[in-house]
Length: 199
Image 1 (cartoon, rainbow, N blue to C red):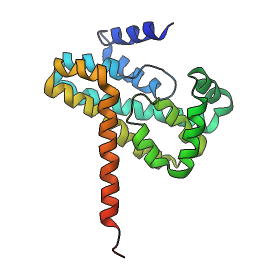
Image 2: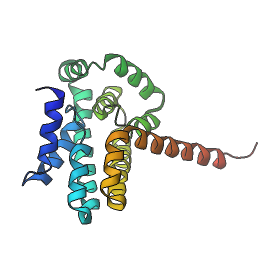
Image 3: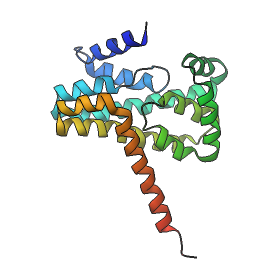
């Protein structure tokens, strides 16, 4: 199945009578091996049920974190078999080596930034975290924060602005979340500087 057909198939699931289950399933598998992000389903579902925007974002978050554990397990226990196959399937060998070295240097910052940006596959982050042996509790908390910020940002924009923001998000989702991630990291840096004792 081509990526375009896979995208259209995922989009159509948003109108399925079991759409909530499909949303959770796509959020789960996207964190470990599926190429299409759950935003494809989340966006039309929030527009159709704006009063349930926060529930839908929470469902995406919970399922994505659970899927992240699966991706972590692939990296930690099955990298030589399953993990290598997934990395090669999406031609992420170069990105994986960069991410693995970055995880050794500063795992939390890498997860906070890259986990928010749609153009960087979250499966790359979860598998790399497992390979690098990142502390599972730290991985879980960071995943929860990153995924919640990502999905609640999208749901919040749609809840507030409706259809006009959908077109902007679908065209500029990478830009929206990248700017948000940059602002978030900038805030952390400012707080860290302010908390440093005066020399």
